[in-house]
Length: 213
Image (cartoon, rainbow, N blue to C red; front, top):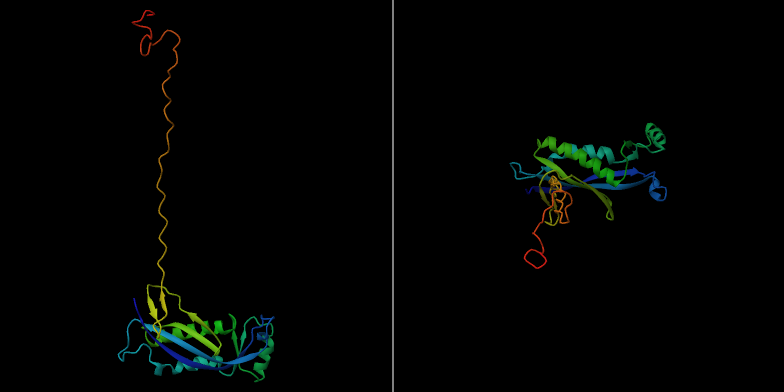
């Protein structure tokens, strides 16, 4: 089943963060980007204005997102220097945001996706949903999070190029058919000479009718 889609870009703000596990890279240092989020929304039916999502009704969502990322310092919940960041926050030097599941553009995309999807579902009473969120750090770096496809649905992007179709469930393995148990072959009749009282001539006397018989 095809669905309608629409896309919207929202500036999240300037956020500072670091990937403390990247010991091999300068990404372990605190650094910042002007983050942007590009949303792809979907629905099966349009509203009374023939819109998928009313972009004019996203003001509250923008506020939630910018509160998380605009002029903030975003730190992983397991950052070994977490207390140092908390101390700076208490001193009013930074606005700290702690993400327990980790930081990075991919994790930001997941967080924004889940936040926006909940918001969109509520304001549209379940009519619309988020298909994909892509977060950009700059023109060369971005990452995205996409809704897992749970039903037979086709999504076509604005350029008409990208299609997501749920693959069919694998067919169940057929039940094994019971095979008949082979029975041992019957022993062939004995053709040798009989001994004892019960002697059979079989085909008769070999010499009957001859001078030997």
